[in-house]
Image 1: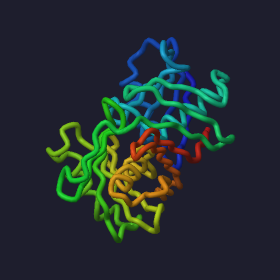
Image 2: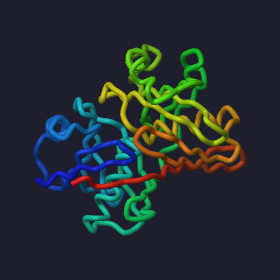
Image 3: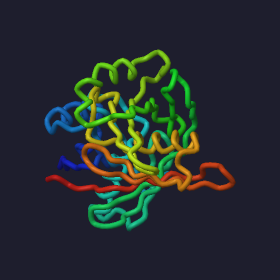
Length: 254
């Protein structure tokens, strides 16, 4: 089985074409993530409802509902295989996701709408689930956040990730507003159990929280992650959120 090593704004993945594969994907995920030192494992499979299906696993073997940067990577993977055109639909555990090729190394996906949004789940810490079942995110503003803060925030991120306020566990998104519509984001991811260079659904969850607070009137967020910049666009109608678009760089490393 050929394995591709891909990156979405620094978020790294081991990627395989698993159509017809009869082995244990969970075991394969743990093995390949350890070998390639990636943030996750993506397996493309047949789907009855979409162009293809995405199986997503964290490095510890925990199956994830979905992954924003992973979805963008698997879209490029499917396009490069010749399975799809410039627009595609993928089946995920969180629901159908629509993808779009912007350029050779630029892809966008329409993320699932939030099924849960609570601005004060744990004090000032908000909670968002994208999709149903949703990807859980704890979102907390850190006014002076820098990339170097991850060393001091690691134990705090781990505590929040396991806090009983989040029964499913949670990815933890620390953010700092840099300017209107611009933030710096640092995400501690469950399953990875550490900070990653980017998190697509994390950046989108920050955008949802800011919009709910009335701090994203234009509906567009430029999210600076340590590994690259992601753009989140919220589409609304009559003050209701109707779509979330995530766009950013994607590359194949091998």
